[in-house]
Length: 98
Image 1 (cartoon, one colour):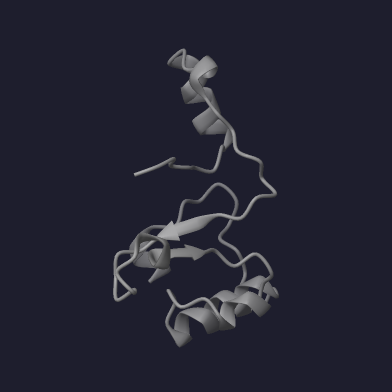
Image 2 (cartoon, rainbow, N blue to C red; image 1 turned 120 degrees about the vertical axis):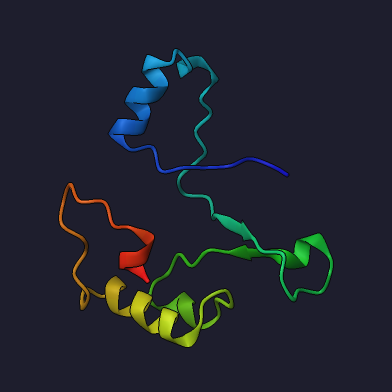
C-alpha cells in the first residue's frame, strides 16, 4: 500500500473543490520519478516489483520491462510525434487504445 496519484486535470480539481476536499489534497513534486508496483514474475521482494516509469522517451523504453516490444514501439513512435495524440476534448477508451 502507499500513495496513489492522478493527473490533476481541471475537471478533477473542480470536483475536489466542489466536494470540499481542497485541504486534504497533497500534491507531489512533479520532477520526482513515478513508480508502478507490478506483482508479476519479480524476485519476490517488494522492492523488486517497483518499476520506474520511463522519463527520457523514447530512450528509457528499451529498459522498461512492463511493456511488450510492440507496446514499446508504439510508445516510442508516439513520443517522437509519429502517432498523433487523441483530439482535444475526446476521451480515448481502453478498447480504442488497445
